[in-house]
Length: 195
Image (cartoon, rainbow, N blue to C red; front, top):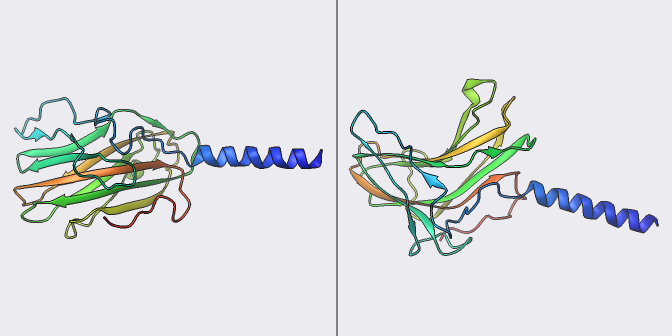
């Protein structure tokens, strides 16, 4: 009887851990296209064009499949690609944001990042937290960006936004793949070597 209770307790703990480590982003490796990601729908008053993402089956990080999200940026574009679903945090106090990114063809420097927006956080200064490259270190090869984030007080949901800032560049292409947002993963879990 004691052994049965112990086994049931261990199974329950394992199931809870498994649920907590679940990726809250659907189609995070873009194998089913980019339908869940889109730019804003309103027209910009400055004449700039919202960049539209594309699926790329010829270039991927590799760990999650054979596709990625491709962003062909020019200095006529603004790149804010929003994940269409609000993500419930289900009581998480800490989350991990990670993704793989790569840039080619920028004649100057650029930033590729994913911003987590906590719309109902009590402190407005803690509503937006990003992970990505430093402005003067764009990744020319597949590079993993990861950040542990303390969920701000009052936050019950999150939104994700992929952003590119090209500064004084005129054009370039960026890729994003294998986005993870959820409970912190074990160290070494999901970390892949640069491709």
